[in-house]
Length: 343
Image (cartoon, rainbow, N blue to C red; front, side, top):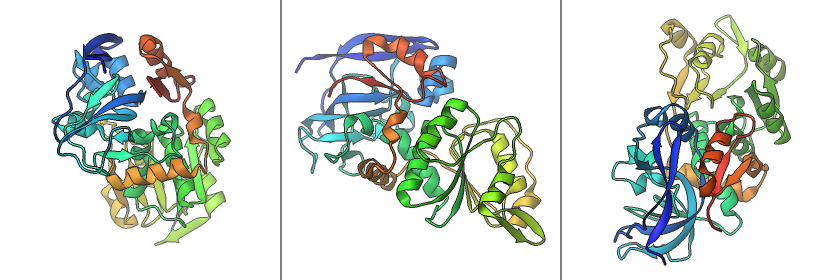
């Protein structure tokens, strides 16, 4: 194995360079992974367009990339249950001293070393049925699954899902795999509406002020409590993240319904506590994922109840980094863009 590798370095907004760096050493408690695929995350796009802090604590002059899969090429002396040759997904948090800096894990590289490598916590071995081409989706997929699971979504729930971007579509696929049949996906962008419908979703075009709650009443019926009638929606999943979605939910939500959001909108908003009390609403944030979410995602990919791999709209080599990021920034052409590094 060569002692040098290619890696992308984040130099600031609009500036990503391909450089040669030493291959990292394998830690006694970790593994060394040869990366096969790496995906461009929304946070990477924010950093590329607006600067590192917009991408979540991404500093200039740093390695970055946190959605990756590959083959183990070296195993630390203290690691159990993992072997050279295993095809794996790696939690990016185990690649940096501070898991909160996982966006700087360094997955846009030919090799990555983990600090720890506990099987089924830090590193998950992929089943033969799941290719690298699909497994590269695991990290963002788990973010959506965690959002669903935070809301304790059940098979019989009636669900309103905001957003048919990558994470929204993957959340929809997880709902299908779980057996949830009553789902409305709310989206505005025509290309994403088309993609969601191609996966079998019932999509409501909520552009131009269209009332998704009126549509939900037609589909799910109404629920009345304390003389207040509302669409019979058990769970609302926000995979967009705009504060207006939460505000609209609080105003229109059914009694004792649940709302889960993965959004990072820091804009101030007006909250009416009386609605929370009178409707007994549950509102929760969703951040990252747990090992159980990873297991569920792998199960979704293995079962193939939806063609979720079709959301990948572009594959590039490292020498096409600028083109890859420019494509990823295009909301129509760049639904999900990945680097194809090695099979």
